[in-house]
Length: 181
Image (cartoon, rainbow, N blue to C red; front, side, top):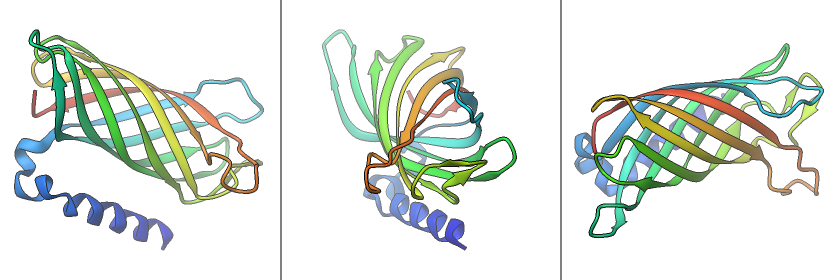
C-alpha cells in the first residue's frame, strides 16, 4: 500500500509541473533502464534495477560556444535487491547536465529524495524509508536517439534518524532513448 501511495505522489508532483503538462513531448528528454551493484565491499551485497525518465527543465546557461549547463528532473522507479530480500525504490529530483548540444559526451550530477518500501535488507538497516540519493554520471550518445550511461550513486538518510546513517554506494549502467537535444 505504501508503494502505491508513493507512486501516486510522484506522478502527481510531475503532472503539477506546468511545463510538463502543457508540452510533454518537447519536455521529455529521455527514458531508459539502469542496473547496478554495490560499489563497496561490505558484508551486504546489493543490486538495483530501475526504469528512469529525464525531463528537460526550462533553465539553462550556455557560453557562445554552446558549452554549458542545463537543468533536468530525474525520475526513477525500480527494485533494490539484497541477498535474500527485495523492495521498491523510487526517486525524483533535480539534476544538472554539463556539455554541449551535439557533443556525444555529457556529465550530470543530481540529488533526489528517495523512497524505500522497506528499510531493512538481510540485516542491513537503512534507518527509515526516506533516503537521499546523490549521483555523478556520464552519458555517451551512440547516435541521435540511443546512448549509454554510467552513474555512481550514494544513498543514505542524511542522518535524519537519530544519527544512524548507513549509506549504500552503487555503480549503475544504463541504456537511454533520447527524444530531445
